[in-house]
Image (tube, rainbow, N blue to C red; front, top):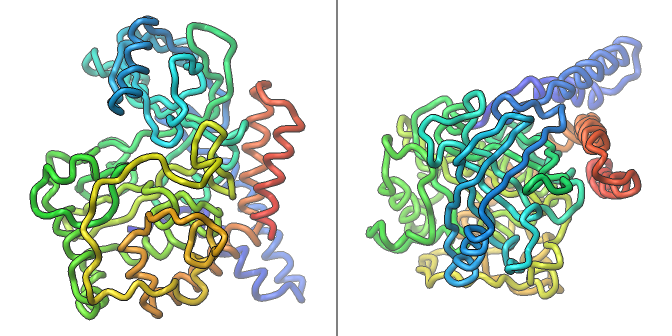
Length: 445
């Protein structure tokens, strides 16, 4: 389900004007007017709940040190992400007995008893232990990890994904501290839950999160076989895992003719084309076609269609994992995936179609120097094997490049987020400029 925002409409106007040429005063006036509209549109930030993205916010958490040590040990021992009680203060408003747990996968590879709590990825849940406790309606906050100091890459990527019409998450810059210690700059985003799903999709449905230990393979009809593969995050009153399992059965086991003829009955093709195009444009190889399994699947109970929802963009714009992540040094993924069923014998895992750009990505089929990651996605592979769908991606990529990059929209977003990070006073100017320049080199190319 592709959303349409004022941003994409404004950018389309601008791109159209540029494409038509500016030989006349009228055309020049159109570009000038559209540019003004872009400036106006991109200055209207989103919000995480009522927390405006145009401001730098403060979040301080405190918890019992013994609880924290047990939380760390539980994850290191068996991968469990246990909840502990915490006191959370947001912009001066304090909430007792909130819940907090680790949230992440590769970002936790280097987790140890000596890890600084203010640098870890967290999920904060204000109503975990006290029913209905909320910050003006907001209950969940995701404190993101990032391989950059500023997190500009993810902030910009999330806004661009939304402008492209995809379901995305709003983000805020936060001065984050633990036990009132010196704060560090963190990016905090919305948590894809029932509230987020209702806001992003104008339909009843269910939301499934692809786990890092899973993939899109079919593992039979038993829901228990998907315990470490998909987790249902929202819409439990609307559907269970049955629709997801049927979808996985179709994309893995249908013959080629049936797959091509009937996929549009199972999947929002337009949204998926945009998803693949955008992952290339923002240079994010940590998507479902790269080294990661980062995505959600939204199931529309009215249409029975699935939508691939982008998630986890802390490596967008060409970033690689940080030094604590083994993948950053060896290119190998430490997490072990369960045994999965193979693709149907009739399926020919052809190279990506022309113009898709997928084969040139790190770890992709077109990168002979990249390590073998063995994390291909059957849906992507079968989709790209079809020339018509590959051509759609090529066309959509060109359209989005014109709308987002050539128009100056991405540059405007980058400038505004850079100003917000600067206002925090937590990152030196040279670092901000360096990390912004990396993004600019991509959006200006």
